[in-house]
Length: 146
Image (cartoon, rainbow, N blue to C red; front, side, top):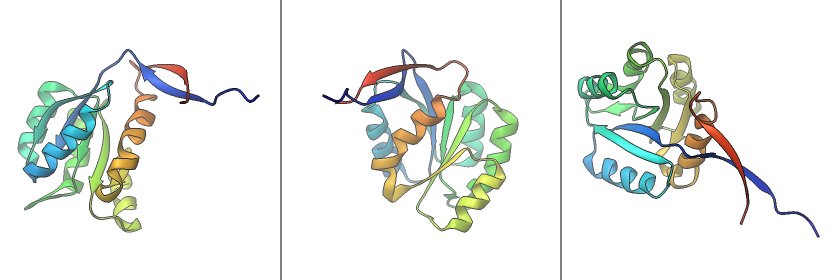
């Protein structure tokens, strides 16, 4: 009989997240989805760049989920500002734009990961947990897969 596969997940931590998107309905849906995972805490939300930078500076989140299109503002322009303001925060670009050119530009600007909104139900939490493994305060434990 084969042993059950082992999955490595962060344990006994709370990954504090700042959600940045100009759509309040999307913010609510993303908050609800993230709230289903016991190690993830949405520390704050922001609908614009200035608000997001202020909240990031005050809260120092572990991770920033950032939309690229914030109405009249560009998420691309915010990435290096977040890296300057909160250098320990990981940045996941979460956007409807899935073309490779957007992914490459986001990564070149300093994003740590890229998730398309249409795939967020499948890939967002695994992406967050993968990045959490690189955070200094994160402990990883092994659990048996169901």
